[in-house]
Length: 422
View 1 (spheres, rainbow, N blue to C red):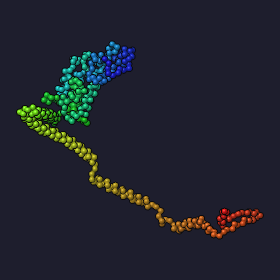
View 2 (cartoon, rainbow, N blue to C red; view 1 turned 30 degrees about the vertical axis):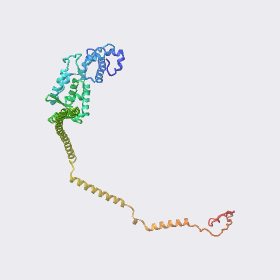
View 3 (cartoon, helix red, strand yellow; view 1 turned 30 degrees about the horizontal axis):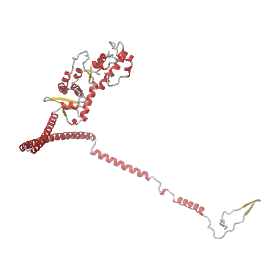
View 4 (cartoon, helix red, strand yellow; view 1 turned 90 degrees about the vertical axis):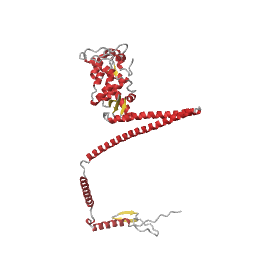
């Protein structure tokens, strides 16, 4: 038989596996590396094997069969099991059950979980380990408990505060295929304070923690009352459906008898149909009453939560307004207005710090203006455009100290415009 998960790489190494399949030394002190090497191989492999198969418990005999290699059985598995028990990675059922000690939950779990669980133990639990003694794997049980809780919180049953044993078994069927597995999961949930179990009138009731809550609360009279109402609702619905089905059947039978010419039988069927309709009406009225009560309970629960939220809100608001008063608010507003006015005055003062007209000499401004106008007159003082023909001037000869300069110059009088010959 081969485990579901693949073996470690060492599994194909004959020399390595020969060492791992050999027996342990009598004491770890004899050869520490030998002891630790084997434990480091077998402990994770056993836990991985249990988790991959979803085994809540294992036995030494099953593990020996599971890890047989080439006809060889690991000789040190018994020592590995004892070490795992010492570490807590495996537990005897007696030790796991004895961990239930959470006050008001103890009695219910002892009655409904612990006692049936102890009945499943096939061997007397002693100091020595029997090859067929079931040893629990807490990691796998914890995973199963988490799965069951998630299934409940995501199912339609989450709207019900209390579930019957039948409902719980149906909910956990795929996670806990056997009664003993279910007992282990319920015990783990109880240890984690995620469920509460009690017995009433020979019926086992289980209450799960609601989503968002840290732990479950005890089953109270209100929970039991709601559970009884839901049971009545279910029973009335079943009987109402039966009465309606009976009425339809009698109607068909009456028609069949009428067509067959049996008038008396048809009338009897109709008479029985009337009684069935009357019974269905009474059942419907009772069902409406029960559903109305459940609806009011639901509304009352909603109102309670709203009121609780209001109380929290008022407390938070009171805390937030602890150091706030109307006088303090008015004083702050006055101070804000005072500082705003002060800021406005400062801004006005700063914006007025500009050179005024009285600080400038008017005569200086007038002289500056006259200078600007004179410069403009020089730039624009050009002669008028001539209207008569202009005769070109002859070259001007200027003699100065024996040097003669001849220059064609006409800087003032403009030249005549050029004539274009046709």
